[in-house]
Length: 180
Image (cartoon, rainbow, N blue to C red; front, side):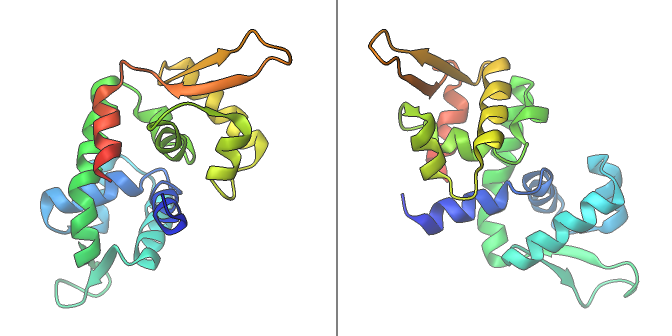
């Protein structure tokens, strides 16, 4: 996997609401700010930050020719339109598993991506995901393990080594990660 691929994936999940906003814009073909606030039950500040990040990434833009300029509608760009159906599938998988809260945290999905092809050690995860601190990785691994998304294995050798891998029960998550 290339760094740009990983960077793009990490940028998508940097904000908790990014995938949900893209999925909703895909579903409705464009939404006003207040409509997104109400449909996603998100605070205005969180949505504003998320939309700014999505516009910076080039996935969302304001529709300049629709409605009042003080109440713009947001629409998907062509690259956002290619990504949004995938985001809708991710949202559906996480919702069906009942792990949306943990799944949409900043590093949860990037860690799942790092583990979906096989097991990795802590240091391998850190090097796979640039910008991930040891503390953030520890907390994310603990949360993902707590909801059963990942498994932690400690070898019997000396010194003992710890590996992490995706739980085999999350086939739907695996297949969605393969599609990215």
